[in-house]
Length: 141
Ligand code: SF4
Image (cartoon, rainbow, N blue to C red; front, top):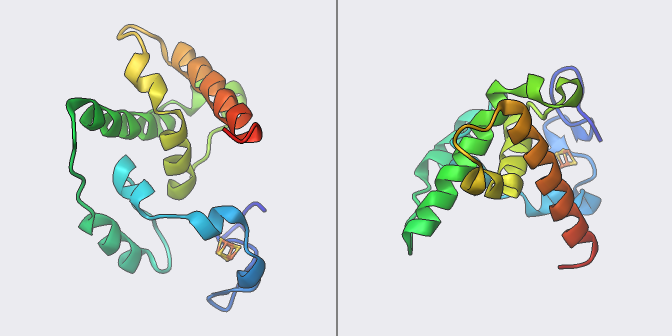
């Protein structure tokens, strides 16, 4: 749906969702743990309350692999924030929630990437991973 110049959703009216009953699936399934997992916080109205909740989450790990996955999610979020120019047209999401969701989606890239990979190579791997995830979702996998 995009965002208003203020950064708010166009469906937000007088502090409430004007389409709450039929809100998009992203809104229905949003979980603030995506922010906690990626080390991100939000700005703007409601941010204090939401960020308090985000800070309260603590993760426990059943394995070293699980710990590395969380690290990869944070690395992915950091990469988007610092390397927009590595993507075609410099286009990457900028809102914390959008960055967090995308970082989680493509974090496997950061588990497998070579240490000497360039930002452009990492961006290409992210785009490919994102397409793979979309294709799997389209096939109901
Ligand atoms: S719940 Fe979704 S559609 Fe409704 S105001 Fe919030 S972001 Fe917009």
